[in-house]
Length: 341
Image 1 (tube, helix red, strand yellow):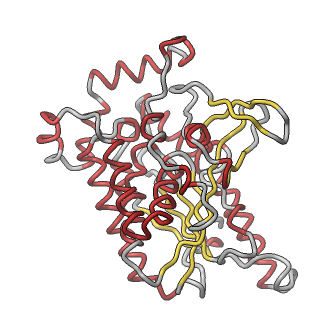
Image 2 (cartoon, rainbow, N blue to C red; image 1 turned 90 degrees about the horizontal axis):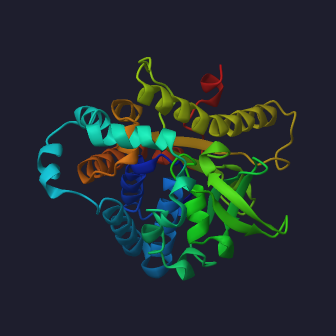
């Protein structure tokens, strides 16, 4: 049995790519997920996966993920789905991005605070996240689950685990401040109710919870924010999207750089084996597809795009398993030295 940890990035509706990755991993009976760390959409995927595994094994995990993304794409005009599904992802992304409704909504979100709605405010994700069975999400059995959010007051990351995970914790992890009001949750360390924003600002996702000695050394990162974009962003939407990608990838880069540093110290004998954990880093991604998409497809969970992303995730996971399954437990498949050269 090959035991792995999963690190699931956030990225709005692009988290459907992770849905496909997880769906394909569930086909491997000799691959066991020991722990999951997730932010934003990664938190939703992680909660659905764990809850299903605890309730009904792999069948339950697959069913929960299907139900989650069915709910995410439920608000849809079927008259649009027919012609939208015929478009390739790039054309569909541009169609949504340059549509009048999206342009108006995007401009409105930049000019109006989510606090301006007063008593009429509601978080559209609450109905989706309330659908989780928290008895199984928070259960001791099944894979360990860590949910990341950012404390607004201190700017520090908070990692929720076990019984701390709730609807509010997951909503906090997915709380983009330009769209949603901060989520307040009691912090026993400070003794006060703290306000939280999206975990992507401080950990997308946080890797350090996976370094516990009882967990395996393999960390499989499902990356949905492209690390590189060759095309210069020129429109306001493209610029804002790339700013968000860079900021949301920066925390991941910092942790990967630290892992690379420790691995070099272990390799040259500066650190003796056992003093620090040997972490094997792997990544499943499809940067080519994500470069075709945009901030519009992150914010609009159109079912045709969700299913294209799921299929892309299945295919990316299949390529990874075909090429690197034998490397699990043996060696990293991400060249960190090259990444930071």
